[in-house]
Length: 224
Image (tube, rainbow, N blue to C red; front, side):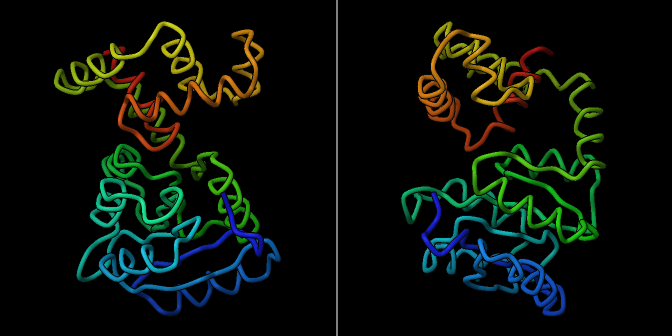
């Protein structure tokens, strides 16, 4: 998943001072390498193709192309390397709509810019390993948002997509939605961790998603 020299990170923010701070924080960890920087979403897309990073730290409000549009294009474009990079939205804004839009569009994490340096490093390592990472305030908003009844179109779409799953895949999807790790799912459903990973991969393909957060949102939407 990562290069031998560490987790490869691309910084995307229109403020040079912010990028400098992020580079200093992440550069202090021997297991993380900042491979490039971009000041807008359009340049970020070019650098993703050229540098094949493991993780993209992406601001939202930027000139030329904002972070949400860049995220959508990353998730719909063919992967330039063995896999698409994990994307962590890093912003000063955490409104309900922004959080849900970013997560539905495939963000692997959503962090505020006041995140403590150790937590930022831990988040980069987590998403590089395939685990979603959200700021505490964002998690609270997400829980509140999914507790509200989604509109009928979202419910219908989610149910139609989940209907394509086998019974076993549906059980794995429900476990993912509860936040269980692969190891926990394996224990609960009496299967090997390798088999769980295979099922999760099938979920991503069949549901047209990139990460576990999107699976969880679909399961919640389908509940109506």
